[in-house]
Length: 288
Image (cartoon, rainbow, N blue to C red; front, side, top):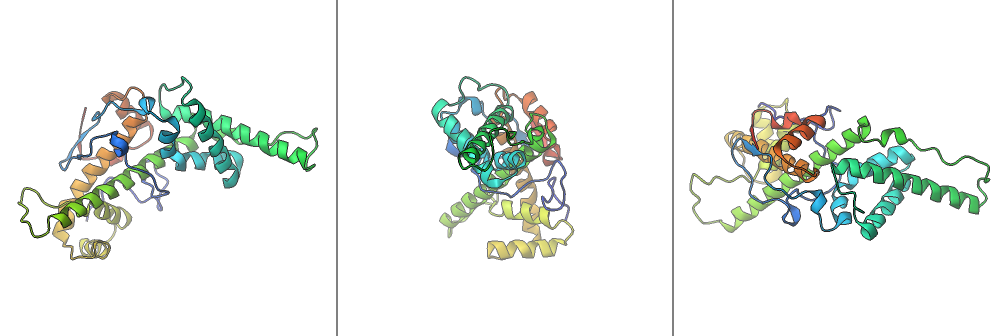
């Protein structure tokens, strides 16, 4: 079975790899994006004009991107516990001050500045606490931070940000599958027309084909059947796979658009290119 245009996060550090790390909410949570998704090969880039700059709660919106932020701060500070404390400092600031008039451009650029400030604040806390306990003298230098990775175009930050967007698309696709299964259960006993086939395997199909691209169609179908706890045929997998690819790409485009101030089609396409996400849209009709 041909694999989709996404790859296994555990097998490559390539720019297109999706990530399953962490738990986050869908791109359309809170009414940000319409819930209907394409079931064709078409992807619409500018489905909504809502972006991060219009979020009512700066802290609430930024919490969507904790995984890449935490990874970056761990690099900078050298400790996950210190990274978590720095995140708490940043979120506390956002709760009090919001975007403080800086809600412009790309969200990832805004966040990297906040992350740098939060890392420095945490380093100052550590130094102050050490002086109070007598662990260091006032003559000793302040804690050295790895701020090279905390730059707007650093390889580390772009990689973590990309993975964060991909993980959100995966989680959103899983929720779409759950909604479809819920709808199917409600329709049990009701005849469903051939023009309205079920799409209740979209996440599992894409996940299994992505993770086990070298296996036969029959083995893939067997893996999906175990997850779905029902019989799954090869034909059904092949029917739902292109739907899953289109849904995943649409969810990813939606997520990217939310992180831009001017989310027109050209800006979204440029961000997709910059982050190395083009492969997720391979073979699909991408329209404005």
